[in-house]
Length: 161
Image (cartoon, rainbow, N blue to C red; front, side, top):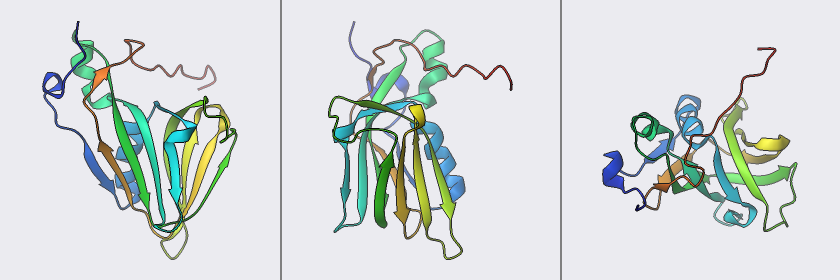
């Protein structure tokens, strides 16, 4: 058996940009359950750019996979521009073996359009970016590959919900 190809999913690599909160919701949904090791995040203070290389679950391809294909992941770059500062909580950035799971992106704007972009991680971790404006891009950079687990990530509902 071989790894999946772009042609198998009948889709091209994603290239999306979010400039407002509605656009960000789309990117947030697509990066849900992406995984990455801590060394794959960088903040270039001079260029005011934060980049993250993630292994993204291909949610957009899930219906095909559920009809008998393979569930897939793809490496993608999540790029945030106009970043004035970055901070992390809930994990050790120095642990090069630590694998983090991205759950959502949330933007809290201030009155002038600047604000904070939070990358919410499993286990109460967070990457918090102070941004001058919302400018987030998501680009697939490799061919899709069969998800190692061979299944879609699950999110059991809270029993109190």
